[in-house]
Amino acid sequence: SNDEKSSKSENEIKKHTNTSPATSSTQLWQKISYILPITTHIIILSVYFYPLFAVPRVEFIFDEFGIFDSKNGDVSMRNSWSSLWRHDYWSKDLYAFDSNRSYRPISVLSFRILN
Image 1 (spheres, rainbow, N blue to C red):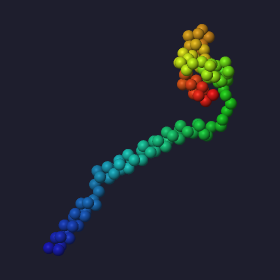
Image 2: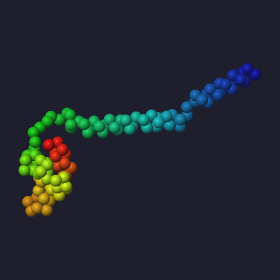
Image 3: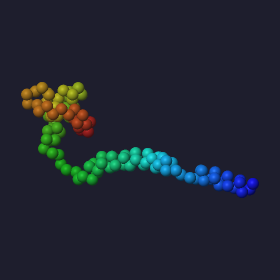
């Protein structure tokens, strides 16, 4: 009777401790489901921040001089906010003959805020 009880309890222990391949596979996927998003975020943030901090600062490039010119009413706040949506990068009307149609209102808005 004692032997039967001990063999039953040993079998129960084996049932609970025995890991089948399906169980270990599930555990592996659970670990991956925690590690993968964290690793992905670290990689994406590293790729994003690398150029901001690791690249040396340089002077303005030639075409950027015109955007900061005092004649540029969109950046110097002489023009209205709505003009940002009707002008090109150099504060010329988009439909003007001499406009190059370089439409970047978000860039101009950021220059206006930082100016």
